[in-house]
Length: 93
Image 1: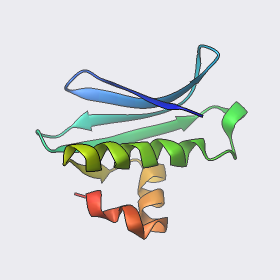
Image 2: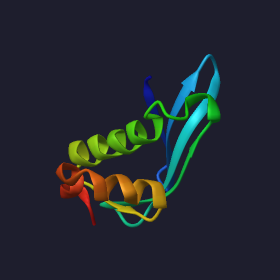
Image 3: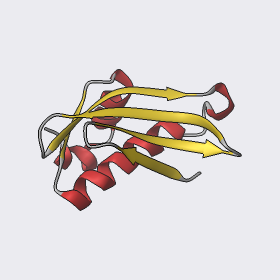
């Protein structure tokens, strides 16, 4: 599954699209120039149990590391991934 990203400078989305249908997405809002807040994660039943949500979080971590940004995971799902995977906490705000 390929995770794609859209960003308009104020809000953004990491998403998984299969055959033109968006089946998983994680939205975020910029909080200044160096931090974004993950506010929602949603996975369609077609991808449940396949790790799609975690892939979205990991892509956001990769993006944050590559761009020197920090993440504030207010979304309960994203927050739970950060709690379970200590090696990604370097990007926590």
